[in-house]
Length: 276
Length: 247
Image (cartoon, rainbow over all chains, first blue to last red; front, side, top):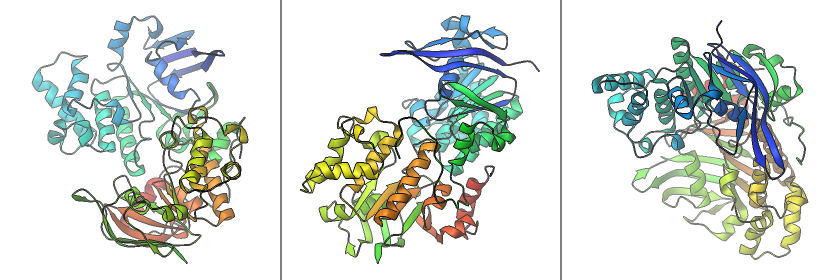
């Protein structure tokens, strides 16, 4: 299998008053056309990892790596202009909250079309038909009406489907989804993830799903990396997550209440500086 | 004794009616959950009880006293609300001490120094956090402050609006344990809004499932645990929560 993405020794550093702090400390991963889940708590560096792949970490943050290649292209040596031709077209990213990621003063149709126009030269009628088809693919039943709406006129679930449509319309090779459903209801969550899952499988894309929800990641990924304070503490097959060996992973798993909960108290992780 | 009785409650925002004929009762000391998806009107019900959604018809009574349509002091002493997002619900330029003392000042209660100390201890916040600002605290610590702020007037009932959905799972576990312990120690009544059914299993005795502004089912939490909810919509919600792999 040809690696789609190869990362060796990725470090993301931010300067602070007390000297530079590594928020990602030497992460390595190889991704094929598969679904990789990255889980961890807030501050574990999982989002920073996703962002650094697209080189979206702004100064004063610094990204270094021994290797970061995408399809054989060295991402770190590209100019900002070359990077723009990769972002969206080859690697795209679905963010957490559609409320903040969609342009509030542009119709949904125009936004999706823009994603396409930025990377390809197409006739107006082609753009319209592809936008249409894409909205249908994310299971929006009446694309005709939705195309003319503004983001505030649609629900959170629909907004997130619009985001996904926008991210997938240039047919990227790799999709990075950073907490794509944490702003959504449980019932809508499943729908959105199934849409992503279906499209990823059908188009043979690679997927990096970043989430704090272990259940969700184990249901929709093939392989899982568990991160804690910038480091990968455990790597396992999604199906094997229940048998995780690392105490941190076990602790996370145990702290989630179950539907048939009978424990009187939930176990909590030991952390420095916490008081109970 | 009945802590909260709601009957035939219709709440409107302007011309649009958000809930239709809501009715349920919560006994004193009980922990009751309102579940449903966004837009089902569950938070609106909490707001009407708290006096933040003023345009409603029907009846709400709290510990036997009928609610007025606004905010009143006597009610505030009995019943307090904890909001979803501890990042948004605390004043960014007030220290923990100022946040916690304010309700006491409003209600003309003295010895605030001791009361603040006491309430911080009961929610598990160390003394050294007392003069910090919200941005110097973690999400879990902030939610503890928000809970302490609600508890400082020694209310008998808490309205909890998704108190853990903005938190990490391990922090969620800490806050859920805290809520459970406080209820046991202080005999509190909880009315909690959430869309997380496992949280209901852990913390609540009964639940009402809401959809499109109506209560479609009121059930015992044991029914939820055994997967024996009756209404088709409740079953669908349960299925979504259970479709993820189990231990």
